[in-house]
Figure 1: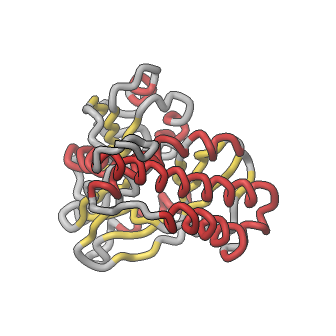
Figure 2: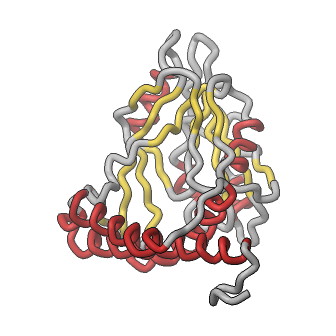
Length: 270
């Protein structure tokens, strides 16, 4: 099914499959999919949503699948494997594609040769405020790639596209509207910090006292002072605090996993 709108298919036969994963995203998936009307195909891989996510997705595409959750990397790769076209554009439900970026993608896929993948800058917002500092901009990430030369890592979190070849740089932006307000910064900490800790543990990392004492403080310093989060006002300070909290929670959980491995309780007793 060709989604509503004219896709960027070119004379050389190239087309673009826009892929995304979802879970209970009824509030955000509609605007995201609406910004993908230019694509030749949209593939949505859901993981058991209990709200109207899949029904909303079917208004834009009939390529909607329900697959058990495997972790971010494997779940996104599953969506890539279901795509019909060689060129893949990955987007998250809390993101919007600007018209400039859509037009740029149309030109890129029409090229003969060129990079195997392209990174895209993101503008991240807290409420209506674009965060320009704190390490949040330009926040480049590979989103457009030739699936014969790139694939997602198998990471539980912090997945990335592993590319065989050159990576170009798009000028057009993604709009990242993940946070309705400052409280959203802190709501996401428990699941992400726990998944990160488990991933670190499985890769052989363990937590020492310096990790708990120094890493969170350094994370705050880097976000708020080194990366000039203080120029973003109250939001910049909140980002620094949430970064501190996230890093502390991640290493605290890693420490707990290490104690369980040694047969100890979380209070240090056998």
